[in-house]
Length: 299
Image 1 (cartoon, rainbow, N blue to C red):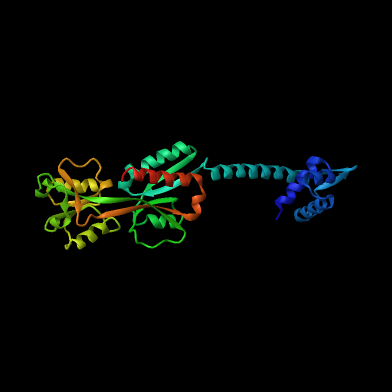
Image 2: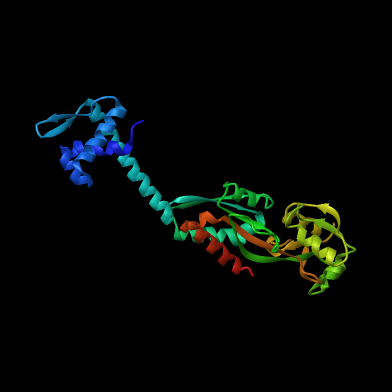
């Protein structure tokens, strides 16, 4: 295999016209340059230089290697420039895994800020089940994941978890429901109601079940939906009541009444997950800061 560094030494000799001049240019001794060329000739299995007076000129094989050495040098320079742009956050691509209800209020303004500060960086948002998002980042399938996680959950090696916000749940009641006249609903007052499920099993459903258990009951789910808009439609149609996190309420269905909950108030905690090693990237740090700032406007 040909040594690329020796090819660059050969190029210096041919460009300067002599071993002595190449040595001065490279900061080597003439003997060291001659040894490098001799080693390259041994690797190539053919003579690369021939003496002409006090100088040298390349053989056909030497010209071939010098031409390729120039191409390699150009590619290396281009690679170094591209790497410098990536390190500085001028270029690159960031993949962000998110779940639906966090997209409009938190992710969208964060992406807008990132594009303003790092216009050469492309953001690829991917709608993902929050149960899988952390694994996607751990396995290198994403740069950032927005997810719901219990505050007491343990650390994950190599992963930085940035707490963005606590998102409290609200009671969603049919218009005209007796509890709709109250300003705040005690969770226990929903114990005897039929319930509409708006969450699939996982981290967003757990705060509901835990809060209901603390209030002394288990919800009686009579209808289920895995998106908040449909869940509100079910409530508006009189199928039951439900709890939806504040970020998931959107504009709200005109057929429902939304009220705060107490004793206890269920809350889901939203984090941004990123690999520790990736935080050296300026664009990624900007995105994390932008997510945190967007989240603060929602608290």
